[in-house]
Length: 234
Image (cartoon, rainbow, N blue to C red; front, side, top):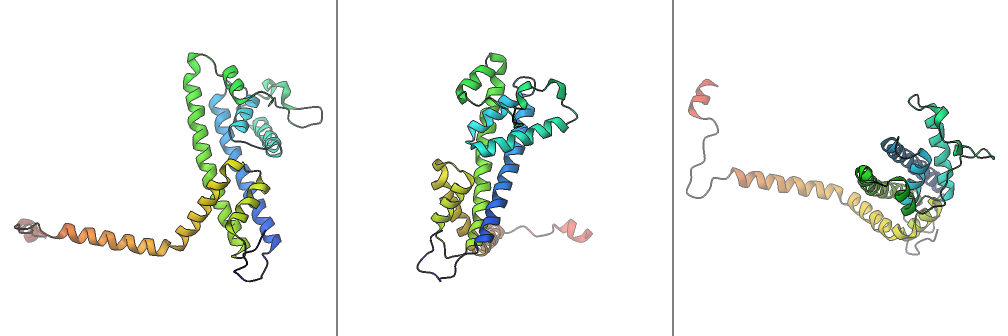
């Protein structure tokens, strides 16, 4: 990573950075695993699990290494789940070399058209679209959280843009969202820097609104805090 020349010459701890990147990768993988299970469970009985995972992988731009790791983890989960009849899992799950085999050669559009045709599945197609948007939003948040940790690990000597680029390369993040993640990192660091100030400003505004609400309108007498009857019975 390139250091900022305006700061000190202390180099970041590369081992700590590597650990931060590994933790980020694991958090991202756990999130993908959780989200793809949601998709598989929702489409169960209508779309085979391998197809559902392939659709998910293409929708969210997973690279080959992450896809293979996710394939195997899903297979283990499905094999262990008591609700799944393992005898009826697709024969293409296990390849000759022992890896989980999934057909990911077709385009996303071809897959959806092939597996989700017919009016009766229009609701499922809509759910997949909505779920895909939700997943992308949650992954963005997760990326930014990871980047904040990496930035804290590298310290102030490394430019934020360099941190984002290194993160994107390490985790195989699509180039199309690098600029968005850069802005997200800057925003997160800014909000953290100004959190106490923002909180205090919010308290002042709330107090001001409460004081304004308590003032009687012009020409009107404020109602007593306790009506006479209530005061006597208090």
